[in-house]
Amino acid sequence: MIDVEICCNSRASAEAAKEGGASRIELCRNLEVGGLTPADEDIDYCVNTLGLRTHVLIRPREGNFCYTEAELMDINLTIKRCKELGVHAVVMGFLTFDGCIDAEVTRRMVQLAAPMEVTFHRAFDEALQDPVEALWQVASARCDRLLTSGQHFSAELGRDTIRSLVGVTGVKILAGGGVTPYNVRELVEYTGICEVHASCKTTLPDGTLQTDPELVRELLQNVSGL
Image 1: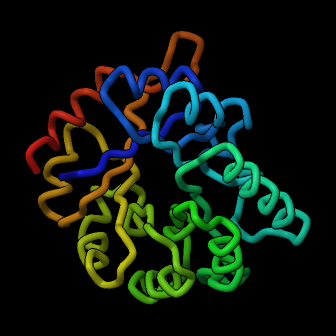
Image 2: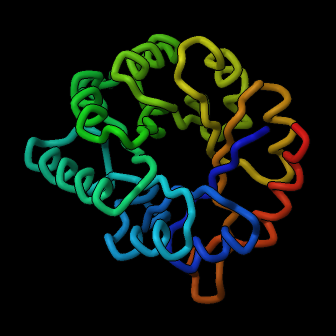
């Protein structure tokens, strides 16, 4: 069975994801800059009102993934609040200034987040390392899963790399980046992944990005039976 995660940038998107049949979301805000940490009240709504399995993006600012000690303290506090709100998993990523996975910082955050699961996000795709070597560092930090497009612009373009990562460690590989109802089935069959991440978004007349329940429904239908 394929586990589908829908990336939602607002309460309205989370409601649309649920309407489309999703049971798991990654909650963020400001998707146009790659996503930032959502507000506490939105986290609480998704977890405790909508009843969705909610994975929360923890990213205090846009830009690189090399954080100051002050920013890491802010991340610490956010992790603690997520735990108090009943979040199921947090989504984070840390790189060193020379472009490698920062396993030391990641390990500290994983320990702090327990018993929540931890997904290492697409900071992985910006790492200046061999992807298998980078994956072993993610694994050494005890992350549960890796969200990746295979170090390419999209998961479709990076599918060979994604396939090379599946089963190498105990880390689950979550393919994301340009995943749609129209390419998801082929991507799953080619790579052997068991988890996919998609936004299924549409642009509203005011320019706002929002999850489309019909796209969610179609994507779920296209992976059913796999």
